[in-house]
Image (cartoon, rainbow, N blue to C red; front, side, top):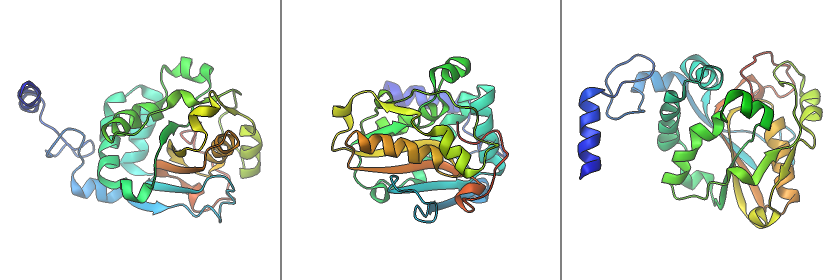
Length: 235
């Protein structure tokens, strides 16, 4: 009862609005249909085309453009964490748990400790954590760490991206992932190099399968051999 009263009071003081056009919407975090329709492009990545051996599948919700691109940039580089709930709403509406399959643990793609200290947070954790817990899944942010600091990947061709992230990750507790079906989550999927190396590390530690989920897909999920030059691409 108190939660309902508090929520009603907040709605009166701060009416929920679409993050793009500021039109009134049904609840906080929601998008209006026209603005959501401009970015939504729910699709499975072709892991064979991308030559991904360890990542079993990857679901992407949006095109990396327009409002989603701006929101991800603002969360990642401007500290605008208030927008995380708008991305969580997209997850609520379009990341179908049935389509995602069995999930024993959800693990975010980690940042190196230096990058995390500089930024103050891992943007992927900010986006996914509450959504994962609301679905009753095991949120295991500490299960995977980034042991090697790498330069930003946005200016590198595919093969150099893969070399840059090789052996960059490690599992902190093999028993935590042994036999587990892992959902690996990130903000942006482009070439798949980072998710592939994470999946390889998890499978070497005993994970039975690793599926991916990303808010947005960039040019790289359509043209895996292309060189990308957008600094907001995956860390």
